[in-house]
Image (cartoon, rainbow, N blue to C red; front, side, top):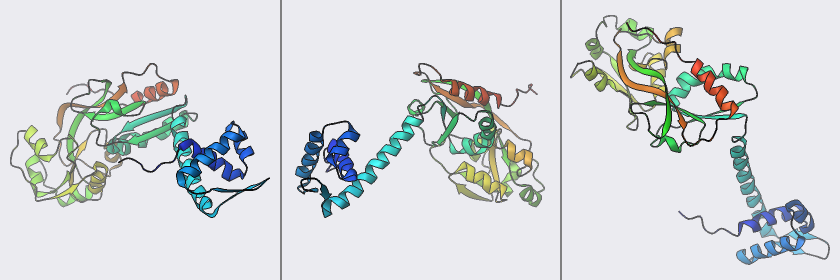
Length: 305
């Protein structure tokens, strides 16, 4: 929808400066224009609004009651624009790195590790932005992106990070209540935690069972959750069995917050990938350093069993 009505934007800048200083002369000096230019811009704004904004005397100017309220709104709006502009300009600097990823990969894999990078690279500002429903990876405004890809995008440079390995997990307390789990079919006696997000192409319980050659396996009950991070927290809290991805839940497994009730693992051709823009003319040194550090966080390759 069109934003309407909007006054001449240059006149707002002139008005704000003149109102703040209560002086056309000081406003002109600040904006590096002539006093006459400030006067013309203010008059243009007055004509647009149909209101007098300044009470003029020989030596001074004062805001009218209507202008006082208008000034507060204009100043607050211009400060917001300036702040947003400053943030964008800041993240274009040589010492910044912007990483886009999903909330699941950010919370479960990346964020637990970045404190090490920050300790070793105090001069680099790291910005992590989470986007879950990405239809076109090439349109992400970032230096690097980390995403699960069943089919890697063609218009990005793609570096595989780790392959997809999917297996059930639960809390030790939940497993203690279900000690007879020895094969995938036994999970039918459990509560399954479902990732309820139609935008994701991650494997769900029905697909996991079908890929193992098992059909018509249904849970005793189910809980639908639309956030994978929340789903894992639900599993840690003992509310049911979740499907987990290796590397994403490794920390929870190592700490004992989660356990694997079965040894069954589904391995697919999908991968978690590092995505980089093809149109970038050159990689900044800060991005190179983060990329090198990131690749060093990957698990060591294992020999085929």
